[in-house]
Image 1 (cartoon, rainbow, N blue to C red):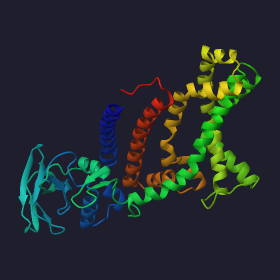
Image 2: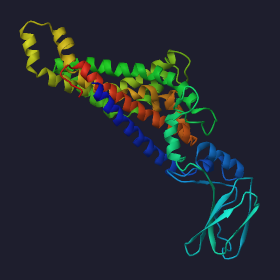
Image 3: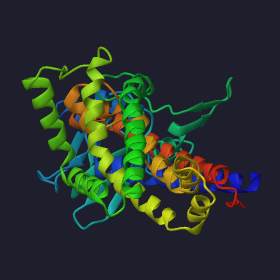
Image 4: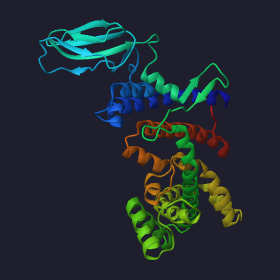
Length: 393
């Protein structure tokens, strides 16, 4: 089993690198310049420079020595490109490289000494970009993204995990936001998760025991109806009926157990239909096995047949179903937390999306993927514990 675990850990590391790569492409290429989104069009060049350097947005994407700078106003030069144009340095900086794109498509590179306060564009320059040089070509945006997950340093404890920097909007440490949001998310999603699994198994056992009879048909119809109704409709209906009309529960906040009762009930009600259908199919297939008929012929009680033999042989499917929902215990529910004002990670993710806080969004996406990888590994180990016939080799 040790060899299997080591191989899976190696594969998991490759999966994490792949997730970081695609997350990097999504947030660093498709999202555009974070400085423009956070600071606006009228920000000072020095302010833009400092913001990009803090986020690493000035670094090359994968490999290179050139880092983008705002020491000189670059960009397009549509007005009179055939005549010389002089740019003034916005702030002190080391030696720079100027790359000018000419009208014929050629690129001209020029050195800009640190002491120079002005730079004259060559005739025919359509656009200009300025770069500072760095020593380490591997100091790039992609390797910085990997370093946010695990970072090695010289002082104790020598390794640092999950340092995603600061949020763009509030300038708070992303790690602090995540730690603060895990508690409310667990308080909401843990009872929802347990309720969905427990009630799903219970009603599925009832449906399987009375297969093709009235209790089974009623439960199947209710489960299909529950799966067909939108999650959003259940939330709004629950808030309107039990919160607004009857006044049994508060509609917004996170100040005690009473604030969690309604969202937990809504979450269980929305998820129980899918679990019931899944577990019913599993149990019906298991009931068709000869070992249960043999146990019944030997006089084993019905409770023992269903509770000991049936559930034990269906443990693989139960673990698989439960494992797919475990990561959401930590990342929370976007809809439940947003509609009920629960300050978990789901609520923080929606707020970050509205405010274009790419740092926090990226951290939540990466943490979610890491949880999925880790829980899939734990589920495979649980298979061997639940079924002795499973060999992890």
